[in-house]
Image 1: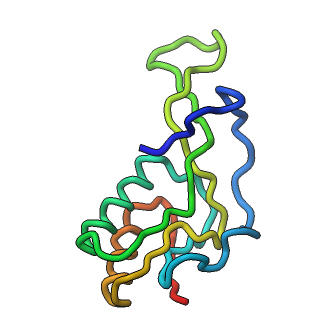
Image 2: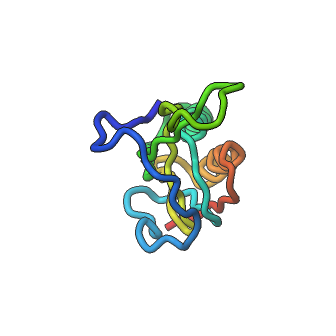
Length: 134
């Protein structure tokens, strides 16, 4: 799964979710894309699940670009741990998605196949998504 090779700091603050995207809002590489309609955290597992369903449906035809990367560490403590005793260890990584951000791009397949593949990938995402084309 996707994760950073090296980070400056091991753990990060939670931060604030939300807002509209100002970057990654237009198709840059392919002809078809999957665009987020709301802001959320998308885990590395969800990105990998969407990537797998797109490549399987297109029968490894065409080219796929993943425009998001999970670089935010999320910590978790074990079950039945008492309060206190510091922050937990890094459990997984998430990508911070804003509304209107392009998540996946696809090229080299027909529009019908691309639309169906992106729809299947949208089912794997925790947010509302829209299929767009150039």
